[in-house]
Amino acid sequence: MNQREMFWRSSRSASWVPISFNPRAFDWQASEMGRPLLPQGVQPATVKVAVIGAAGPAGLSSLKELREVGFDVTVYERRSDVGGIFTVSGDPTVTSATDWTRSQLSKYISPMSDFPFPDETSLYVSSREWSEYYRQYARHFKLYVHIRFDMVVKVITRDHDNAKWLVYLEGQTDPEPFDKVVFASGSEAKAIRPVIEGLDVFEGQFLHGQAYKSPVDFKDENVVVLGMGNSAADTASELTGHASNVYLSHRRGARIVPRSNEDGPMDTFFSWKKLRLGFWAEHYVPGLFQLIVDGLIQRRAIQSRDAEISDRSIEGDGGHLICSDHLVPLVQQGKIQSVRGIRRFTGPRSLELDDGSVLEEIDAVIACTGYRPDFSLLPDLTFTQLGDDLPPFPDLFQNIFPPAYGDSLACLNYGIVTESAAPFRELQAMAVAQVWAGRSPLPPREAMERQVDDYQQWLGWRMRVLTGTYFGKGRMYPWMKFLHRTAGTGMYEHMSWGWRGWWFWLRERRVCGMMGWGVYSPHMYRLFETGKRSAWPGARDAIIRVNEERERAFPRNKKHDKKQAKNKV
Image (cartoon, rainbow, N blue to C red; front, side, top):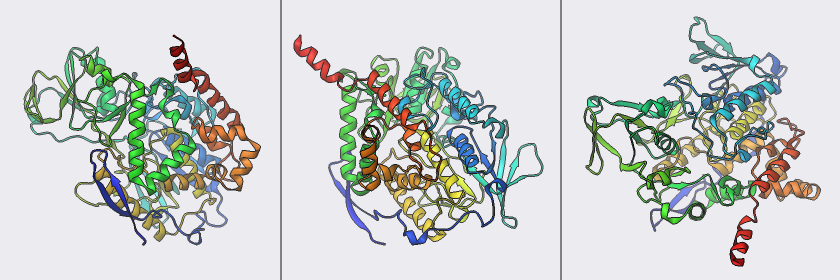
């Protein structure tokens, strides 16, 4: 396999490090493709599919997309309603948002591709708005009748003799057989719990962020929030005004950016064209990409706030990035105290930090230390362990299909992207439906296994070098091409320099410009009729409406007008 040597520079170092990788690692020859996944003569309506896990964007879109191509689909949901993590749950073992939670990305780039948000939706969608949105989505597409709520799946095993998947449910003796399974339990299902010396002597409350449900539960208490991620920032910020003292304990800083600056939501700066260019640079020239990203983040963050509210005790220069409007001001106001990581617990209400200082009279420690997808229900899924310093990686082609069971098992809980979660999970669901319907064939097993191995090597290297790399992070340049072409959105074909791109530009110059350089609206995924996923007649108007709404709310010449007014004064 041909290797290419390139150079990468950490943002924390002036040194350039040589790396070797195969830039075409995810490509395969067209001659390797063409394996149909439905036997000849078998109709989708006779094929039973189970969708397992949260009825959030992955589960709901899987149900919708698979039914559209004719499969008989049943969803098993442990909650009592749709909404996934945005449906607030009091169960400490269930990951859910709180009433205070709002999206980090704006409403302009966040809805499902063929179901716009209501006009009155907040700029940054609240957990209650998300929950109601998913209920409206399920009602609109008549999905409720196919969902079995309050159902707990115990395990899913393969019946090799009958080529079925057996779904074992709590309270039932006999399993329910299915031809295919979509595993959509969410990427935030399994809490990562830290191991801290002396925890057995601590008499205060120690809980993972998964079990945190409301700041009211910590009224007048001294609380340590452990971690430096989006959940930790939100939890610490929410506790102010309720807890007596809030400490944010962390071993690494983070580059902190707000949701918006004076030009509007930060996410609307990244258009389809800009993101494709970024994906290309990350794939082929990662060192240059890192330099560009560092500069962009720094420039956008500086524009968002005055220099005097920056705080080096929480800000870092590594690869870790969090989005928070409140954390820096609250630290500056003394409402959140930034402290070092926890070394050990020293008594019933005390703990020692990494710098040797001791915190006394601590009532609770909330560990916002992250999540991983939970694959424990799938004993037939294989994993690869690259080292003791890394978690085992599931063997999934394009982060979705097990090479041994690509025709019958799909996991939508592993891959992580920096784009909006809802339309991304929907894009994955479109791809799965088109693969299983036989419209987008998978390559042979050997080719899938090569892609899995190449991806795992890349992810392992990245997790070791860039501490902010998420488990399951997608290699965006080839991965997005695979998903869009497999789903059949037509985006890469019509937004390219090929004849389809030129023809689209000649016919629809305004819309083409909006899609390429305007708001990255998911509605564009439904514009083109390709013979694969269904197009939406309202896509064109929705794309225009989102761009016009954004322009009305945040005119792009506002900064220029402000400078002119200042000069006149």
